[in-house]
Length: 136
Image 1 (tube, helix red, strand yellow):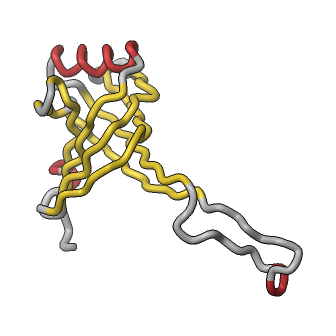
Image 2: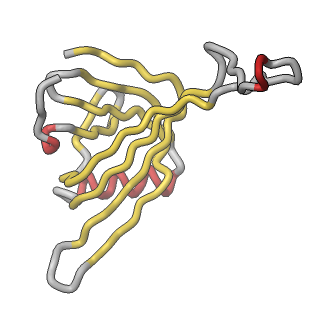
């Protein structure tokens, strides 16, 4: 993969069935994918080295980001998703790579206001189902 501009990475939320909108002006975004491995180590494991069960465990994805809301509509939607505890479809668009889509729950929304600057926010999402990847 060649170098990409971070600002071109998008986080989008489903506002109506199959209709996605960009979530605010994210200045920073981070995506993490994890697998909780299943430990099957036992008394007779060779050299007492840890053993793992291939293909098992829980897969999950986390998304976090921060920035400024670009309009009241996107702010209201994100805020309502949090307050309702909704699980919505979200998309992560990575330019020239692909689009990751799936169910996520908004787990935190934090605001920050410095004296001589705009109000900013930080948010975190946790996967809530299977994810799909579509290459661009």
